[in-house]
Image (cartoon, rainbow, N blue to C red; front, side, top):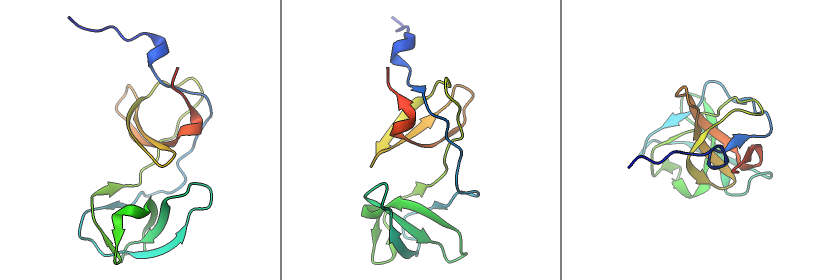
Length: 115
């Protein structure tokens, strides 16, 4: 039997968020990066720069000896209050979300009300 999702089960955006880095950094396991500073606002995130000078925040735990240990995409999602999203993953204060129209990206957990 299909389950009907009530509005209370759908995470809702309560604070607008605009993607801060365009283009996003998409990296794959085994790629070399130059580690930079740690994020003061979101502990556990590390700024890395790809050899092509594109940078982005990644979980520090996936950087070992200046190499990425797992695939990661830094894309952020631009949303407005009231938007519905599905949470696909949670990591270090951020949620990987997808909108009903198929857009996907990371949002700070503080932007969401899980209902």
